[in-house]
Image 1: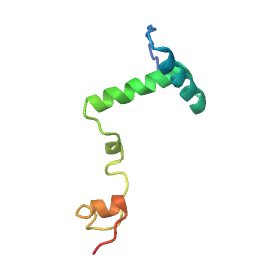
Image 2: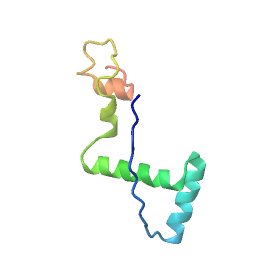
Image 3: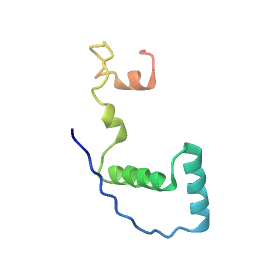
Image 4: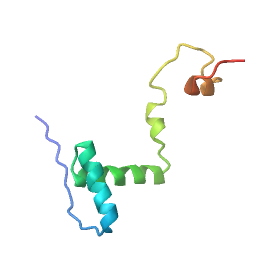
Length: 83
């Protein structure tokens, strides 16, 4: 049996009242804790900073069946008709 251990570090962050109120409401809307919302936001910010583009996670996952798809990616992505 394998166990995965995640070590969490507790920290303190100061937020202005409006940001805190909005973040708490967003966490509630998503059905997650305030801490989880903060973790997700930090993860997203750090990935963007490092140049990780979220859409790249899906690159190569799907096949369109169109051998010309690499040339017509805008048409595929944006559902444009060919002239």
